[in-house]
Length: 122
Image (cartoon, rainbow, N blue to C red):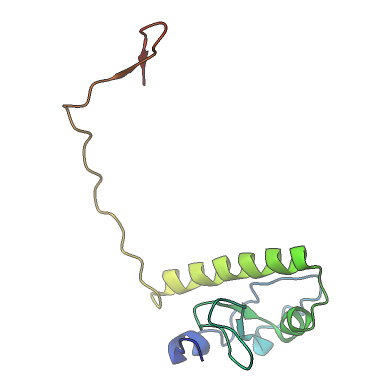
């Protein structure tokens, strides 16, 4: 089995569906953490919990039974994972370190110049 996180699984409770497929029932009461196939998945093995998204019962069913084309399934799954990750970061469940400052460019680096004209490129 892939990585399991009770916090990630419980975070799906009463969340909006992030798949929003054409089959979506838009009912937060039916939303669960839906696993999306990743490298950890195999026969009788679920994907990692961080390779998941919030899905209502209808979207979960549509994805599991492959009611969508492969391209649409990939689109909805990737979009749902991105939306779910955004919710996790905003709520503090997943922490992404932020850069506090950017280093200044070195004063030793000369401006680039166009080979033919010799003009400075910024």
